[in-house]
Image 1: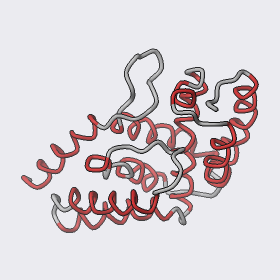
Image 2: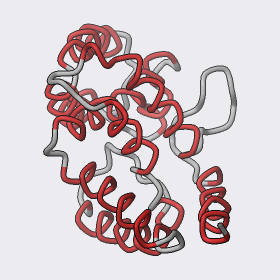
Image 3: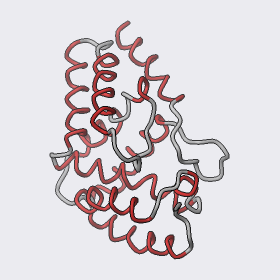
Length: 192
């Protein structure tokens, strides 16, 4: 029991990891815990649109653990260029430490889920990646391009980074977003 309590209290720190996008109607930035919770519900809501059949329990579990390494590493905006191998190595060290607080069998299970998400090869991981990549886009569209403009993120960079995972994991979601992104481009909602 104590190991599980220690783990849960360590996860509390995820609430303090600030991301680059603001929640709708708020002046503050969202945190990684909010992001993970919202993704889990988003994925459940999108299940019928998955590019391939998925085990939703596995998808939700992946989405709930995928950013836990940010407790040690902090969040990096998805549109950042370069350094991804180093970031992923640092996150892997972090999740090994954090999951290591749990009993060995649970630690191994959570690490497997985290690695499955990171490798993005299974149907579940591909769908989870698509959902993960779409959420900041939806917030930016609703917030007049807030983080794109603040961070100088161009339309081309957004499309380059999000189209493949969303189109593969949830094609209907990509179809939905594609036209809205073009509208946002015409409105000047992207950075230079």
